[in-house]
Every structure is written in C-alpha cells, then in structure tokens.
Image 1 (cartoon, each protein chain N blue to C red):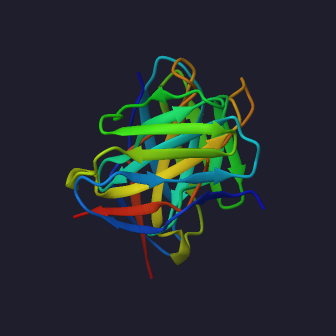
Image 2: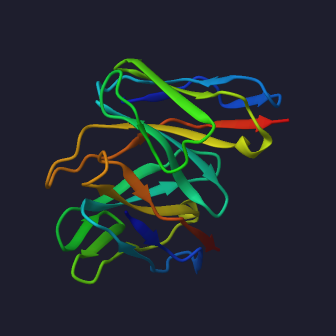
Length: 116
Length: 111
C-alpha cells in the first residue's frame, strides 16, 4: 500500500517558534509538494521539489522554507511561526507528468497546525 | 498561470445524480483530475481525463472538453458516504508540473 506519511496530525506552537513539518513517501516519487488548505481557499501551493536538493517556490512561499536532502523526505519549515500560519498543511508526492499518463498526487493525512 | 472555478456547494438526495462543473483558464496542462476529500481526511484521487470525452469509473464519470475549457464530475446513485468535498485539478505543463487545484465543491447528500 503506497503511503505518504506526515510526522504529526496536530501541532500547537507559539508565535515566533521555528516549526518543522516532516513528510516521507515510500513510492520513490521524484516530485513532492507542500500545500496549505484553508476554508474557502482550497489547496494553495507553498513549495515543491522535482528532485533531491531541488526546490521551487509555489504561490505562497513567504514565511516558509523547505529542505529535500533525500528523495523520500520533504520538510517544510516555518522560520518564525505566526498566527496567520494556522492552517492544515498537506504534503503530496507524484511521478513526473507525461502526455497521456495519469500521474496522480498522493497525499499525506495532513498536519493541523495551530499557532498561538 | 492556471485558475479553476467550481461551485462552492451542491446538495442532492440519496440515489440521485449530481454533476459538479469545473471551468478553467490555463496556459497548458496535461489533463484534468478530480479528487475527493472527506472531512478530516486527505484528498484522494478519483479520475483523470487526458483527452476530451468521458471517462467512467463505477458510479463516477468525468468529462473534459478542452475547446470549452470545461470539465465535470458526474456522480450517480448517490450514497451518504459521497458527502465530501470534490476538487478539480490540472497538472501544469509550464511551471514545474505542479498540481493546481480548484477551490472545491462541498457535496451534501441528504437521506
């Protein structure tokens, strides 16, 4: 059974803390993604990585950074947590796309982060 | 860039058929996908249309018309367990092969 695992389901952190969200996939996928999900706003892309040590900014990268030292692991870092970063964070992985090849995104269960 | 639009909510009764529409503006994409997300759960893949036309998977079907920049998800013989949020998504050809998701449609199935 393929799996994307996020290290925590729920986290409560204080304003100003440095926060690490970990994501591990066991499917040997090249592409990995971090999204945040907020009511009414859908899934918004924070950062993505298409290979080890490669990273690209998504639509809302401010206040975040990422690390991908190994193919299976993609970490999201909140440099100094703020209350507006309270959200559901979803990690996903996939194979690279092809013309007619379905390459679905596999998601982790999500981390509900509350910054107080 | 890519942007997708969906209705925010749809309500239907058990046994009925419901169609969730998705319109998009895109500069290039591989195909249109649909994902289902139950409350508290992760999005899970439902269907994919690489080419125009209808794809059927059990009670669910999905349609794509590239000329109309339009797709839909059709759910038949609705069951209570189908109550969830449904997202359409495209895979961007031009920007790192990202998945770009619509805002989601909340489907409520009533008894």
